[in-house]
Amino acid sequence: MRLVAVSKTFAGGAVREAAQAGLRDFGENYVTEGVEKIRELRGLGLIWHYVGPIQSNKTRLIAEHFDWVHSIDREKIAARLSQARGAEQTELQVCIQVNVSGESSKGGAAPEGIVSLARKVAGLPRMKLRGLMAIPEPTSDERLQRRRFAELRALRDELNRDGLALDTLSMGMSADMEAAIAEGATMVRVGTAIFGERTS
Ligand SMILES: *Cc1c(COP(=O)(O)O)cnc(C)c1O
Image (cartoon, rainbow, N blue to C red; front, side, top):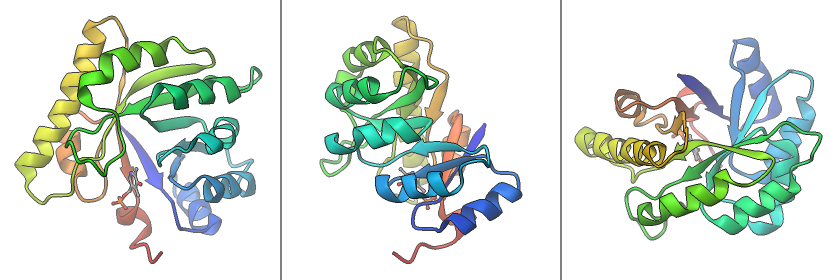
């Protein structure tokens, strides 16, 4: 189980402290803010995860600076990231974000299109499809939390039966990580429970 510390809105100093306490994986969901921190903290050997919405005009910055991208939800974005990843860099590690709760406002690909999207992403050069990510609707109903995470796991299993070899389920945040872990999360993305409440 891997803990990704989501440091969005917190300054580089907070990341540095968390790194001194032993954390290695950090998540950001605003591109320019994330890239600034990556540049500032270069040399600490940190692993950077982009977990936010992806606009076409930001794919180059993301591909050049981040190690992981969790939030791919369409082929066009995946293709642009693949193209922008340097040949001298290691493969970009990616997950497809799935909209498991069907909210129209939420990012993520519809579950129905996942098999076809995953095949396409898995075929792109300079990136490696590792698994699936989801941000279900906020709820304190633990049974509903578990149902959503179980749905994501079932989709991952379906893709693996289809011939892929996905080892990653990026699911669970401060408020629902216990449910996610119970359903097989391999990465949890935790902000508030590590850094405290965000003010902005
Ligand atoms: C902010 C954020 C998190 C962390 O949320 P917390 O509730 O603060 O733990 C996790 N994943 C994504 C995609 C985020 O944007």
